Length: 74
Image 1: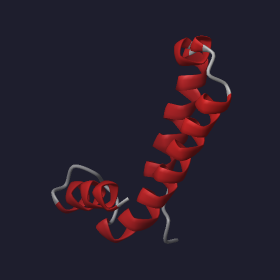
Image 2: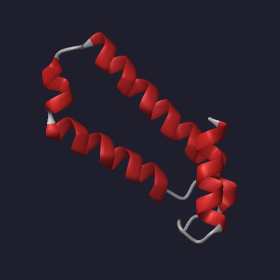
Image 3: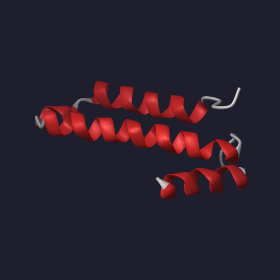
Image 4: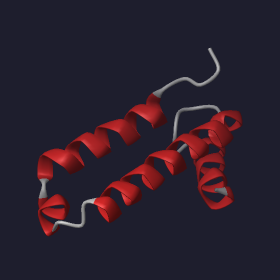
């Protein structure tokens, strides 16, 4: 998780992202939990169709973008 957190902190400090770098720990935890859930889903359902399902990946992308856009500290 520290690599994700560091990447998010650097993005905030360098003006690449628009959120406060202090939010990076919570955002990193949420992104890691989401990616772990995706990995588990693909292990349980190893059908290659899952990897090619554009609607599935669109939803994943939408969820990750929501995590990045959400204000954690409100």
